[in-house]
Length: 190
Length: 251
Image (cartoon, rainbow over all chains, first blue to last red; front, side, top):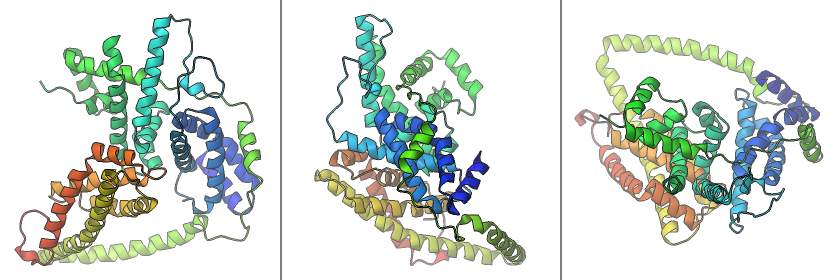
């Protein structure tokens, strides 16, 4: 897979623009997935995926041939996703919706036939999880998403964030601590 | 009995602990650590919404959306990395020959004149100290500006982030170079500084006063600034001294 990517990059740099289309097709779903994990919004993640591949194309000449294309494009995707997130932060706080809304799946909870108490608790948990994610610094958020949600190794996270492995590990620790502290009062209540 | 730290428990959750069996055994016999581990597991069991599945042909759709404004790269040969292997191979051969030659001379010198090697090492350290002084000076100014902006309720501008980005690779290099030094304060301060620089450099936009306050609170930038001032004073006081008069720690 990695070697095929390099062959396609060579073709793109030799003037075959369509070869980049194959790279987009190959990596767009995973880019969308990581963008969604960071932004928690389908619309934002779609935009981030497009922006990522646009930027990727324009910077392709600077791509280091020893690197893995997936890691490289992930790094661009993460930066784009953080930018989208930062833009959104300037907007008002997001309320928890009462009714289903296709545009904002990230802030709703599935009704699995639970009673009102459980529903309320679920909403409280989601609100606290969301608040904890907002409190994380960009590095912590990225490291947490990659480690916990994407299942990447510390080595891969360090490569994607361009930091030493110890820093990547520390970022994951701090993120988990923030999540744990945000949710702790609920465990006591329940 | 030593209890497990939060970091060890988190490592255990992510299957990254070196002594997994030891941790598991401890968790079986220690109620306090078991409870703490359960709390971490509960917190991590709260999952974010899963990404919605994309329709077949999603990649094609993305490509169709973005392809129009993209201009093809020029097809004439580029001096990109793909043309590097042959050059790199030639360079590697040259380097190997040079390294072998130098290694032979160094070995000979080490055998016959070990005292000269000590002098050379001291000289190297002195060069590092000299350059490090400049790096610490720039870092100190950056931290002062960050703290000043934070306490004044202002946002840190992009120039500060650019400065942090410039300092980051240098800091990493010094930290790695001095990792084996016998000065724990210096290593810890450079490590601490790297985390702060990372946060500033990786910030997606301008750092608001709230971001700066969080940075100051979580990363204790005041304390870091103090450490850097102490280190600067030490580095400056050692630069002009004779190498042979120094004993003990590197700094």
